[in-house]
Length: 80
Image (cartoon, rainbow, N blue to C red; front, side, top):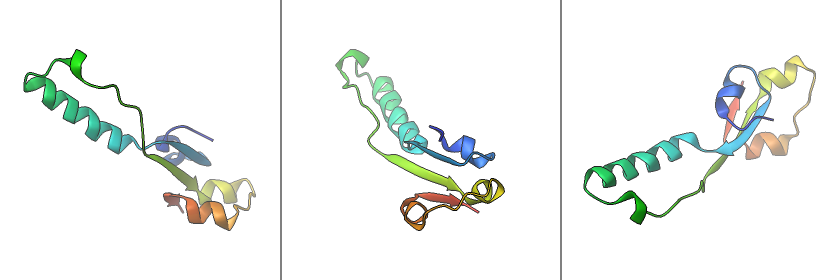
């Protein structure tokens, strides 16, 4: 189990963690606010609110692991 999707893309079994694309989008909105003159100290601190489950079926097959259908159905992304 990995915290980042990138590990699964290169052969890891599965990951569950914050959606990195959404985090990057939120970060750019903070940069835009700073460039518009807002003080960083006045901005709220945000934590991740969107998480994603990614499963690598190729990796599961390679180690002889049968993934439960419920895990595959609930996954946000399945690598085959």
